[in-house]
Image 1: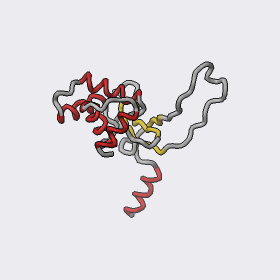
Image 2: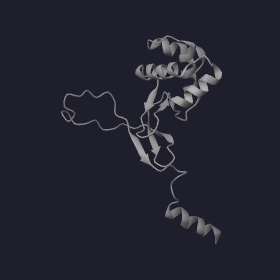
Image 3: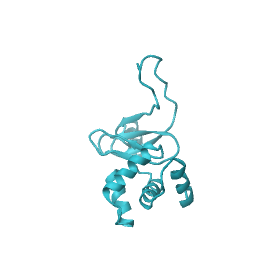
Image 4: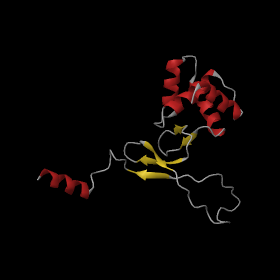
Length: 150
């Protein structure tokens, strides 16, 4: 997304395109590694030292509320942020904390009445387990590698 598209996106969602807000949005669009607010602040601050921590955090809140950025809440760890425009789910590694994108598929909606007076906005899945780097090798993989050695 180029500079003009970012400006249009911000303004189209009722947000002023300030230099700090633009920098946060541009950083998130360029980095799809689900950074924390602190990581975003550090990166934006390197480019423009006038940007305060509070401004960065407030801009993230505004971007989330406008629906331009998703906050991936991770209990016990810092929230992660994602500006990937394509709908997707997430996989969270229990060991290293890595957050990975998982292709989107529709999630069955709860049955009518099961939510009481709540109004459902969206269903999103967060899968939890061990990522490929942290997971022990599966038995089939071990057997295959042993067969290749003989």
